[in-house]
Image (cartoon, rainbow, N blue to C red; front, side, top):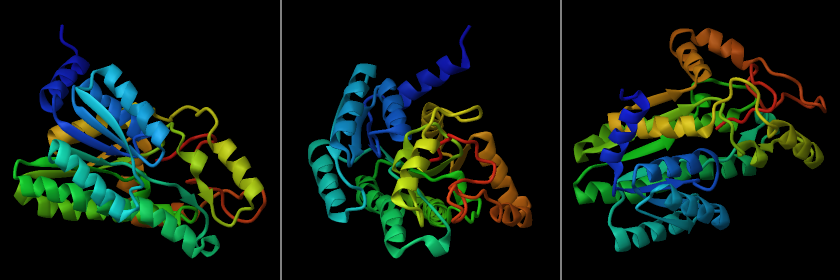
Length: 306
């Protein structure tokens, strides 16, 4: 008897075997799981991360999992020139990529009045400009080649839900979601699909680099430790998001919402916007009493968000 998982695996192998896939933020979490999922489908995988060692580790594991080829590139996606040079190297050696997964992102929490301009720039440079650079470089190559392709952007459930504790992060992910919709409207004429994947609570090391605006450095360390503990119930592994990314490409889905809480906040934003705004006003206090904790109000202790 054929199982659903077995059928899906064969579908992925038929679609991606020998295809060239580039994943940003591939050193950890969702990016790493996604690179490995494409590897198991027999793709050639380019693992991009600003952490060279992490990218290399992902590439080695991808080869062991069945990638036709895999290699690492140490690149900061917020650096436009570096991304253009990466595009030139990839095109010169392998041609245009078949699938681009814009996954690289950073976390930022804190109330708007506690958030500095540097905090805004640092977050938007990676979360928004990193996606723009990836789409400009590799989307152009797909369009010029004329053989189609697919672009995936990893947004977040935060794109649907306003929050007093995540104004920078939520703004960046809402921008990514709208950019994806705009690119889908344009790139369709080139046969290039574009999908946004919006996960909710995912168990990753994402929060270990989270910055908390307006919080002293010592408390920053304590908060990172708190939010990077072993996750509790209801938190999904990054492999769940990786599978959703592959399905989004196969099915050419415009927006893919992953995890139940992400579906809830999307429904609230569409059908009960006033309730969504009320939820946005909620939040727990930080240990110092200086403001709201870096969470959605229903966030379980120790969970990561991507």
